[in-house]
Each structure stands twice: as C-alpha cells, then as structure tokens.
Image (tube, rainbow, N blue to C red; front, side, top):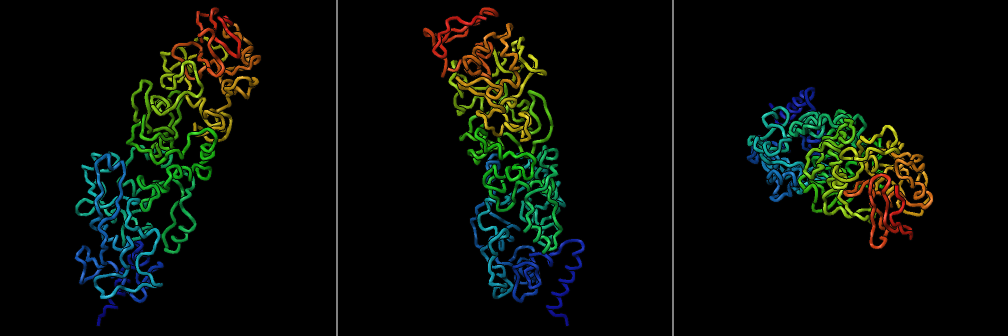
Length: 573
C-alpha cells in the first residue's frame, strides 16, 4: 500500500535526480523540512513542499499556494527621483511577490500553512524568519522595485531598459507583464546562489533588463582587480550549501560591486552604503583600485567627497542645484567612465558621460571638453563664491575668465593671444592649449612627478593646486614657492629680465619679494593684457588710480601704490 510517506520519499528522490541539472530545492535553504541544509528547519516535518504548496486546502493562489499570507497592507515601497522623472509609482506588492513576502517580510511563522491545523514546529524555537539578509521586513524602500508593469511604454520613457519582449528565458515577467520576485529568483533552483534565475557573473542577470549603452566598455565592466565584496563568511556559507564559488573580480561582480538589490544602504539608487562616497572609496582607497583617491580627498584642499553627497541627482539643476555639493558622481559616471586618453582641451574617458557647461554657457549632457565640467560649478553658478584673492577686477566666473575675446587668458578654451612669451618651457608654444587640471590637480599625482592618482581630488596646496604657489608678499623667491608658475615658465628666463618681455621681474619678485599673483591673475582678464589684475591686499590707489597703462611695447607702465611706494607711470617697458 502506497502511503503519504512513500510519496514524500518518491518526491525527494525525483528532486535529487534533477540536481544534476540544477541545484534542487532539496539542497537549498528553501527546504525547511528536517532534511534541509539551513539553520531554519522543522522539528519533525519531512515534507519538503508543504511549506509553500499543497494539493488540498490551498490559499487559492497559484501554484496551489499553502503558506498563510501576511496581513501587511502598507509596505514602504521603493521610490527614487529617477522613477519620478518617468512617472512610475511602485505599487504595493502583488502576485508572486506577495507570496514570497509571506515568509520574507518576517511577520508570519515559517510553518504557518493552511493545510495544517497548527503551524509546523521549527527547531530552536524559531517562528518567523530570523533577522538577517533573508528577512526583508515591511520596509522595501531599499529593495529592487517589484510588482510594476514592465512593458514597451515603460521602455519608451527610459531607454536604458531592455525591450521586455527580449526577456524570455532570462527574466520572467508574470502573466500581467509585471516584474516580480520570481523575475530574478527561481525559488526551486539554487545552482547560481541566492536562488538567482541565471548566472549573474558580469551582471548578466542585471543586463537582461538594464542596458546602459556605455557599460560594456566602461572601466568597471572590465576591471580585473579583485573585488572586496566576497567576504570570507560568504565564501564559507557557499561552501556549506554546496554553491559553486563566485568569481571575485570587479568585472565579474559587475553591478553588485556597488549596488545591493535588497536592503541597500543608499536606498534611492540601491547603493551598498548610505554615504555615496563610501561606495566609491571602498575600492578607490588603494586596496582594490591601484590609486588611493581617498587619501587625496582628505587633504587640506579638496573636492570633498562627503560634502552634501546625498543631494546629488541626475535630474537636478546642473548649474544651480538646490544644495551645492561636490561628490564623485558630479565628475564621474561609474557606468560610462573608460580609459580613453585625450589631449587638451578634450575630455579623457574618465569623464565620459558627465554633464557640463560649454564655453558659451550652454548645457552639454555629455561633455566634449574637460573645461566644460569645471564650468558647471565654477562658471555661472550663483553659489560659487568670490575670487580667492581680492582683485581689482573681481570676476569669479571662470567661464568668463577664459573667454577668447578677453585681452589676456591662460589658453584653456583657445590658444592665447600673446605671440611673444619667451619664458615658455618646451614643448609648450604660444599656440598650445592646456587643461584646468594642468594647474589644479593632486600634488602627489603623475603630473606633479608623483605616483598618486591623477585629477583634482585633493592637494596640500590651496586652492587645489598641483604645486605650491605662494600668494603672500614678503616671501623669498624660490623654485618651491613659485613651483606652479615655474612648471611652464622658465625661472631663469623670467629672472634674467629679458628685454623683449618685462625687464623688472627680478626687481619685483626677488628684491621686493612681490608674489606673482600680486600683479597677475592666472585665469584671465577681460580688459588687460599680460594677465594683469592687481591683488588689492598689497596694491592700492595712487591719487585715486590703480591702473596698468598699456601704451604698447616700450611705453607700458603702472599707476598705483604698492608696498607703500607710489608708482606714477613708473617702470616703463
């Protein structure tokens, strides 16, 4: 006579036989019977399927659902500015997701099933899902959105999504085209770990739905460095559950290097950590990525990664966001950055995909020139503040400082106007164009002769200068004090008082100990040649006048008072 016990044994045998093709439920933590491999299992119940399914007295939900439903009616669901921008509101969990939550929200006993008069008793006094990664709770705001309709209308609003008709065999939508827990998870098969529907190496599962066009060539998609995410405890758990060990490179981890689909620390973008910069610095601290950017942003002058980091959003006003901030994502698109090299003024691949402001003040959604990124914050923004030094002409808008229509400017947007600059160090010429980052950069980076990271993350020389530039008068001239100027301009040429340039440099810089910045503005000046824009800390009027009198070569002079000495059309050259 065939008994219920025989049927149970036969079912288990069939599932074990299937294990050669898949990691069956028998060997997974979804086996809550006494034979289960997990820590949560029954005291005497041997039926593997009964915790979810029954042939009789089911809940009425397909497929023959047995577990009692949660009474929660108001889950906190996922939301983000990105979804707001496309008009998508995530509904309360429905369909298969509601069934999964009957255990995974932690409100109903694991053994609470409709086919039993009393709940199935669990070992060690366990009732509901214990706290941990499997207990999602009722706050799902840090979990991947579920139960929304994923159709072509949605893709039309967000072109970074795949056409849902291509998802068959990878991600499964339910009968009403809704994204559910079962779209990514197969509750009966744990061969890929976490009951994933497919191997997610290289984010293959994620890319079934998400299709950022720049991702395949990005540095994060191909990075061979070891990922810090595969902890010893996780590897041990995988071994215990007989799950194949996952590869541990950043490229293999893919999206999971930065994002968490469940219980994310940074909810609105499903980031692993609540602080946006922690997601970057967990690798870019010298432990995974070769260069230690964290060390740079901790320097005295820096683009501070932790400055209002949570306010950044792709939909914000680029020039005047509600709260001014400086975060990694302002300058780098982690899904688009690549290793492409460039020459001035073009932006290198590390800045691929970020937005900026053009030389004429327009918006560029994907910058072409490096300076366009700088102008986003240091151009027309009303929150940028004033000039570092109190200038005679106090224009703080760097976009305007560098205009090619100005009388003088460092050649960032266009080649300079002065055809005679004898102090230039080869290979620089008067036709050369330079980057903002040729001056504003890490003091320990390769352009400064160091081994640190390249880029304006931080420096010990304010304001974020690659090399020292003393701006105080009454300091001795030296290669170190004016290292930034001497990077491009020959010290020996400047101090030799060349007759075809300014023949009183030595008198001012060496003898009078006048800083370069007391007379020159390094960005640009609309109405003066030779970058002349006096520092009013040291320069005052002479009979109500502060002026650089440009009468042409041989008749240029100054009228002002400096160091208590009145210049009345003195120093003609």
